Image (cartoon, rainbow, N blue to C red):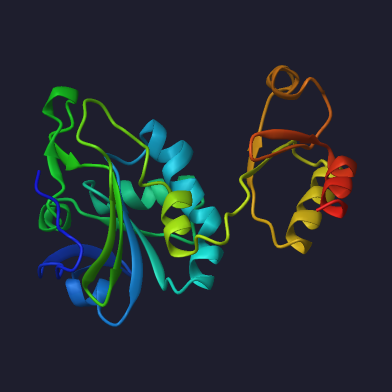
Length: 239
């Protein structure tokens, strides 16, 4: 694996993708020309870390990336278009552009195609992120070449921290239940404060295990348990 370096142009390539029910070509220029984008690559659609952490956080922080000059966030995986489209819908990640690199063309052009035959995956992408401006690599965040699937430097918070070191976004998780009016209050409070969040639905048993409480919502900020919507209101007032 010989990754592309900062200052290098992304090599020309063409991907086959679908648009409006037909196959079309997607070129290097289509993705990068005249734009500043974040690209992040991962081993596979529907895989654990990719689905639980990598994609959701980029989707959550897209407004912060946009505020710091990023025109698009591209998620690249060596999967076919149908798998990537199903994964996008499953993730509800409407703020991220999913790129199906079925033949590994883009991943190989970036020097990040690896052999994961030992897992039954065949050729796949190493986990990485990079900032590309008008087709030129501005910065790379490539996971260390060690055994397994390291996830240390290609996450959304690390990349955003490089783009805007003075503004560290809060990591907010809200545990909710369907039809919960207090959850709606919590969402409104966070929205009014301009704070993004991830939302999960937990069973009563898991909710008690996580928070020691049985009511929803239960809100966690940067790993600290804040509590319900009333507790959130106090926390916001004290900021």
